Length: 300
Length: 175
Image (cartoon, rainbow over all chains, first blue to last red; front, side, top):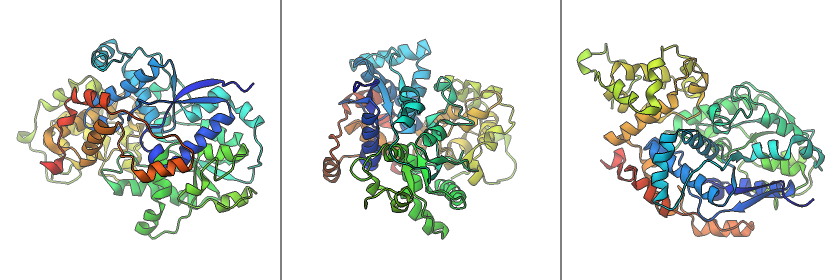
């Protein structure tokens, strides 16, 4: 079949399409390869996660508005950003309360929308895990990545708060990204600072605590024999990758730890062109060594 | 600025606002605070506390219960939370500290302590729907990679934000 196994409204969020387009590029390519159809929407806006800081009601309304837009089109939502995933899933949880839902709907009605709760929200990794499945992914692998040792980083809002994710994976002891990495043929390693947050959600307000968090993780990873950190959120990506230079300056270190987004790694295993299909040339920490180790030809 | 990590001698009962805790717990999202028995599991599992001990969910919860309104709402540290949700994930009493902190931040924002990045982002969303502007360079960069033009809509978002009054919140730096 060349038909799609599932159709989703693509929720790009704010940061991926503006600052980490290799995540968007590789996600679109991987979804196409594996039969997930992505529909581009004209009316999505910010998920509302940062607006919660000033007004929980404003954050909830933005999330509900986006959910209602997808509902109107009869589509479920596929997210790339862990934080968007969490914001939308949390809003769905809040909106189960009839009083909250009625209050929100009174406001949505004034902008021509309604929320009923039909639309489901899935992060791309969850869609790959549940809709495509590890077995079907493994059958499509074209490149041997068994020489790569990879440290997975989950991203807090991918699974938390656990109450919003219907029992998908275990937020205290997660395994789905490890399994998804293993499905590519690469070796997913366990490491001590797996649970550390990237600090991205308070970075705009206070850089220092975030830098301490990132440094702690990079220091741990530098001592492990790994070829790359793999993330599934563009904010985690920016913190560990683009901020690595600044960390080196501030802490007098020379970390050079590559960071890839999961669809980039999966796309590589599926035979994608590193530059044209997966945007490897856009990553802040060069990926040449990783490609050489994986035996992939082609300069980037 | 009063920092809750600083030692300033014993707490003066006359400085406490005894209605603060009930005012916080009146918000549905924070109603669980009463169940907190200060065990500290939240702080033990907080990645931020690990590298930045001045931030402690346990301490903040206790300060709210004691009525230390000024010290809590004026503290820069309440904005440092990275929103990882470990505190509520680990809490044996099912206290949603993340939600309690959001109530505190909302009160602090109303009281004049809003950090400018969050105020600026809200204003940007009201214009374009996103927290960023899309400039010409980006348009070209996306085109070169055959990515579709970014489409978003700020008109509905603007009306919804205005209905909450969040559009009128000024940053601390603007006051």
